[in-house]
Image (cartoon, rainbow, N blue to C red):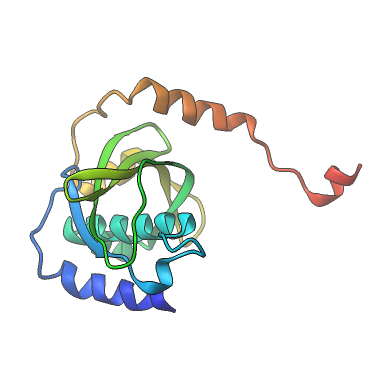
Length: 181
């Protein structure tokens, strides 16, 4: 429920902040709240991933993409993510999440997101996402880029990001029945 309040606050404040191109870096301010803490009194590692979701919503809203997605009845889903922690965030700390699209392939868009406190990076994540149609099916990246008004080719992904994305193909899901066999 606390994240619902944060989402509503984000929706309200996003409308008053500067517009962005979907390929611009989006800086979204946050503060560590009491319910963000774990038993060691620093921000819970799971909370970082949830905050990343909110920062991506801010990017989509400020770029105008959110409204267009809703009109098309398309929605984003995360298919893969990784995060590396450098420092801790503690109660009351102000920090920004800096989000930017770093590239795309035929099915996915790759977003780099960094947690920054006092101009020092606290954590960095890379998220692989794609878009689905509420009526069923996948939105191609070409369709997505056309909707966003992006005509340029994807920048070259960092080599490690391409390898990381490719390596995930080996992680196959099995039903519980096949795991027992």
